Length: 358
Image (cartoon, rainbow, N blue to C red; front, side, top):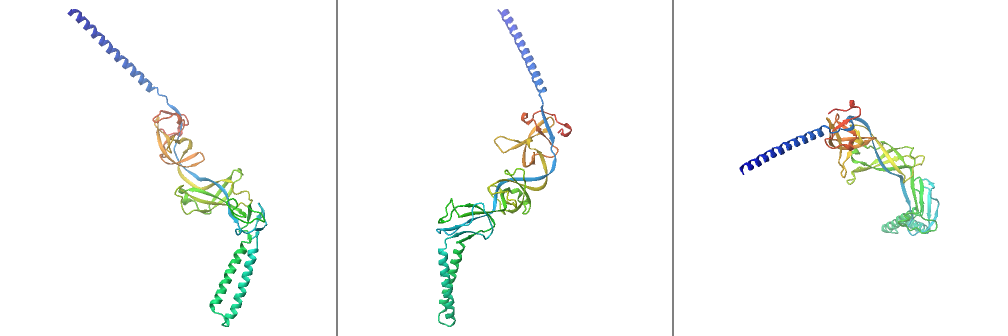
């Protein structure tokens, strides 16, 4: 019995050593395979360039609409009949030109009252000098005359309606014979605009406040005349910054001597702010992190890359200014970023003489 038992124990021991030997062998084989996989990691082919500081002309572009330099609503006294309208839509008019005459019944009555008041003052003036009337009576007559004169002058201005400036009649809301009663659809009898010059009002980012000066030149383009560039000047800038938009309004004046520009046209305004020194990289090299406003680039470090957050500024053609995150001399990836992750192995395939081997 003991003999069979010893034989069984011997076989079990042999089996145990055999299993242990095989396990060690398999583990050794697996490790060699993993090591081989690491050694055969494939480098991603990319293009790269060294970051440099550059001095570039700085231009900013904003959009707006062409507006009349001035606009006027020609109105008369409410409830008064319109006698004549002497102009039509599209007519050019001069400053002071008669445009509309209103019913003159009230004006004639006011003129009669003014004449009576004038005669009363003249009569009492003589009597006052000889002491026949008191100073209070004479003063009252003078006051009534001044009131009659003001009433007459007001009605005269509102009976013969003239142009406030030289411009163009753009809208005609009433016709002769109608009683003038302003409304939301017809706020005035006529609307007129000054089209020589015109203006564009743009909202400029607050960081340019100290660089925008009255009188500086601007260029204006429109979709209506895509091949034509118009010259304008900064006429006015707001003295305050809008808290919500962090911008300030700037008015661009365009002489418009050929009268090609009309109110309502869409316009693009470019302002030349001179040259500025900074770090510029291809805009295509900057990646926007989905769902956020964060941006980053891939910086080459040795044979691998690091994802580096950056803050960007204005664009100049196909370049973007880097405000923070990069320093001159670093190498960034400009092509092939879609296949990269943090720490990816890379192989530069463009001119390596231009690439830093950091």
